[in-house]
Image 1 (cartoon, helix red, strand yellow):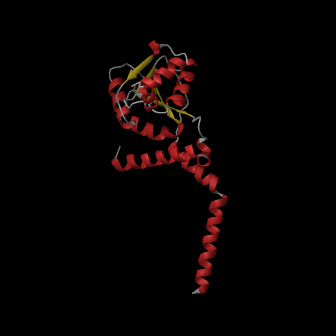
Image 2 (cartoon, one colour):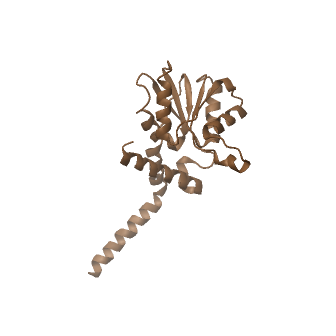
Image 3 (tube, helix red, strand yellow):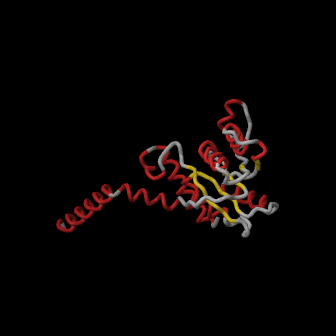
Length: 204
């Protein structure tokens, strides 16, 4: 009996040591479950999902100025809570527009769609909007760690004749490929993993 316990302890010790030594590549592999990116090409519009307006807005402004699209569309109806302390009631899509204007994007090149409180609802709203447009390609821009789930959801609602090009904005708060080294990374990546599982369970 003691011999079996000794073997079990040695096996457990070996596994623990192996996991510790190879923790970086193991944890980094979770990143691959969340991230997908396409090669950028010219499109009719850039869709900037709400939330994370600083990083996503900066990336949208960058590729807009590089000439990849003449229009930026900002969906989302959630309140921008950062502005409530200033008694300013605006939505996240309006906050995104403010950031884009700050970055030098002309007002005429920004479309605000005050609809959607989640990735799923924003995809529905954008899908309806695109049915009225003669677009052939759109760039879907969101946080890098949110790209795979966003793509899977948007593919359900985007008209089949429109090509979806996915672009991820890197976080200014943590490194997505070393996410476990910071509190922001742990929170963001774990939340995204939970949401991904939730969407799978709900069939979204």
